Amino acid sequence: MFTGIITDIGRVRAIRDTNRDRRFELETAYDLATVEIGASISHSGCCLTVVEKGDHWFAVEVSGETLSATTLSDWTVGRRVNLERAARAGDELGGHIVSGHVDGVGEVLSVTPEGGSHRIRIRAPRPLHRYVASKGSIGVEGVSLTVNEVEVEVFGVNIIPHTWEVTTLGALRPGSRVNLEIDMLARYLARWQETAA
Image (cartoon, rainbow, N blue to C red; front, side, top):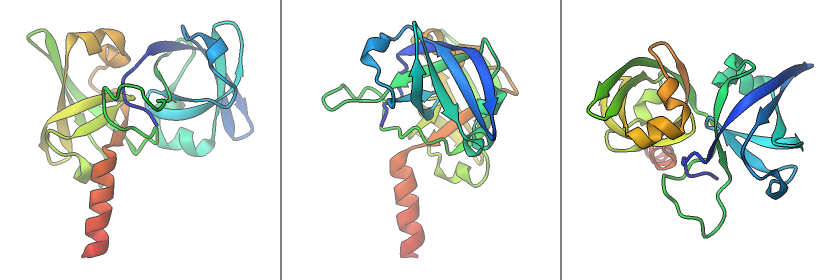
């Protein structure tokens, strides 16, 4: 489990295809002495397992299924990636509960400065858009955000200067593809309503 609070921006340093899977090596500022092989780390919202590590880098392997359902198939060497280590009991829950299971890929429609902040409008894929609610939480590229408004499949989020600077969201442009994870409570409430009907 994660909280959607980014703790490092990694950089893809190498990519290698292995049969149907893909192996990524990422540079990081994490103290890798505290990261075990088999540890879970969120990569722009996608929970991946550390399979190897070296001096300031670690490797993960990504299945064909994950590549087809996330933006990871777009990654190239040099790509900056939002990283978050798994939450531990007793950690501050600064964002919201995030599983690291990407629900769909959204498209950025606009990025507009608003005072010191930025308003980003994103189109969620159908039928995922039904689970996005105004004032609810959503994970965008692994970042915990509050939904400001919803218009059918388009929703808006406001990015404060701190988040703009310490995540990769500041690099988003119209047309950018983003990993989306809907709020876990919304997911289970919708499922409960479907089975109760």
